[in-house]
Length: 135
Image (cartoon, rainbow, N blue to C red; front, side):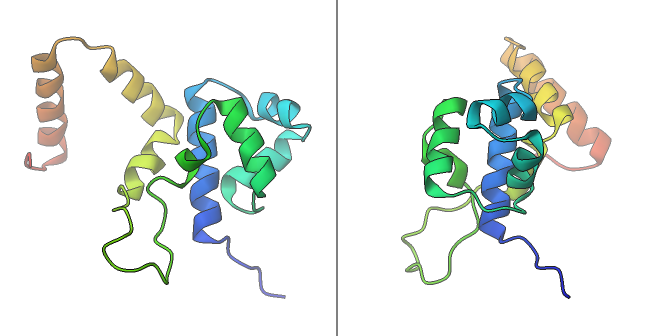
């Protein structure tokens, strides 16, 4: 029996749930308790293994204090959408990065730096370390 790969939209929505949950410093267990689910079910939602139904997504959006549309921002484009009408998706590497504990910690720390010149120098330093030129 061939294992079916998760739908890209389900995966994206799940990663946005994970990102927002982590931004709130909420455990999978705590979210699961609020939903009446086990943390394993929350894990499956976050990986995109299990699809989140509309009413459950609305419940999650209420608990995580974001609109339902938050979970679809930057998602994969759906076929059949007229060209030019779809909003340009944000690069997935940004949401993938923010869905990690390191990415979230780095972003939080960076945003606490009040001096814009210092923040710019940090970005320049990281770009030098990686060998990439500034845009």
